[in-house]
Length: 258
Ligand code: ZN
Ligand code: FE
Image 1 (cartoon, rainbow, N blue to C red):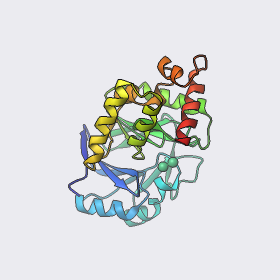
Image 2 (cartoon, rainbow, N blue to C red):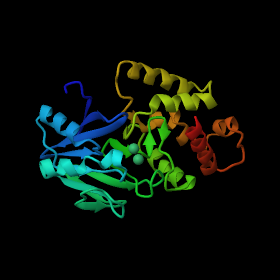
Image 3 (cartoon, rainbow, N blue to C red):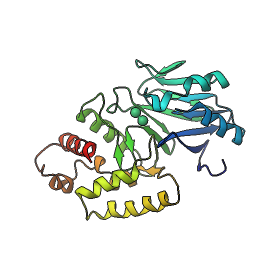
């Protein structure tokens, strides 16, 4: 388990846990506890925690999909941890629901909850000092599918994330970075930011490393879905006059077919 990537962010130590086929769970170690973000596989988390001599005290779910929550019940049963997730949707074994603007105290760390609907109507991003966990809303060079909301709703959520400080680390729910960049370069083959980013991501992936974390500043340059208001993108897809949300919706529809 010593090969797990870890990042020290003030009162938090973040471990990246690849799980299932292309999902990421995260362990957030803080003084007095451990929060697990989006565990689909309890066994995997328990095995990692045992190796690190850590015990989960909390589960935080970004949204209700199974590939982010299927480990809740077994993990809660094994450890007695508290399950926190969005309200109004079926989060397995939830103890406490949260909503936009809530602040969740985790020892000396604080998690600020941001509603970021779009992928589902109850997706939330979890913001800490210096890092944001975006679930299936913002991916590295991509964004989640629109299962329950329209394009303007997701675009608004992505705009909220885009406003975070550039050096904010982005930890997302899936490893789709290479495919996302291949898609982006199929539309803008000469874009320097996209080309440079694909080289970086390919090098990481070739070594078996995750492409997370990214940074908000990096995403602003190398994520087409955050650039729907960029004239170069409009021109590339023949939408000079459409508004940004419509351009975003067209990009997302094209990504589904890629
Ligand atoms: Zn999902
Ligand atoms: Fe997912």
